[in-house]
Image (cartoon, rainbow over the protein chains, first blue to last red):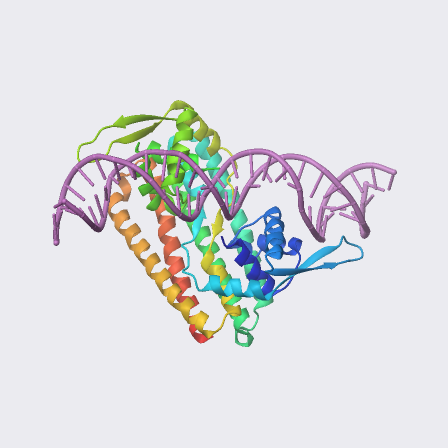
Length: 181
Length: 181
DNA sequence: TGTTGATATGCAATTAGTTTCATAGCAGGA
DNA sequence: TCCTGCTATGAAACTAATTGCATATCAACA
């Protein structure tokens, strides 16, 4: 499992509550490791029980209380140990690719519906790309003045940007192929 | 779930045994939907119980017997229904991206180990790209003479090829970044 | 004759992840 | 005052997926 480790990295970059982590997983880090808030809360409790993180109850006014988590020494050791293990190949669940191949076994109506879905999917990825580019300008304006952590975050973001560009180009290819069928 | 549907597509393209499906999932379709042989056998049994597929026991000489699966009408209907559902966003479990951001919290030794892992990872992706390109030349030599199913398989393969090229370029970026740290 | 490797199938136990539901505070607008 | 929406946390039930076994046939080779 590696959700624990994704959480450790995120909390080392900046401590935060389960809710804040869930939002980060919806944005930056979640593009490489998806997780729902239910899953995050559950794992955080386990990590707390294992002594990997510590929680601090923070009362807020104008908002409900929150539990702010920080990484403890055993968590940091667990992360270091995990970092030295061999990298597992990425696992992908790319439903659209399966549906495109499946379109061979559907009729014209189904293919029209698929084209609409691909267009919606493309619009989503265009939004994601724009969000990445905005975030890049905001967080890494001057490439020379970055510390090690920021450079590593930046290179991962560049991977996300190139991924989105590649997907958009491929979806155009898919749309042409579906139209020419 | 969609493993059922990925199996349906693969079996419609060509009927086969669990073992053969597992090999296909290791190669073409598995790049978009990973699955182990245990998982595939289990799901095939359930699909058979649900009447989605039918099995035929085939005795072979020189080899153990096998159960060859074909898609039945209810399975095909289930596939069509699924094809018309909205496409879910792809879910990714990209361990390497997490480890790269995690490297900010490790020492020089850990970063050296990560560079070695990235190089190995890069070599794996180079192998995958070469296998895709070989497969493309073998299966789609003449782009004009393809039927609808082959064109759809081809466009998905092109996606895989572009993905691998993008990953290789990004990994070079990662290696430069790690060396310059 | 024994070992390796490919083919072929599966169970059992565990872990990971999704889905559904539930609660609660407070802000701002209709 | 009621409704929506954001913040904030979580339990419970279920489904999916992984991990670790286990078995068996047959070919090729030492």
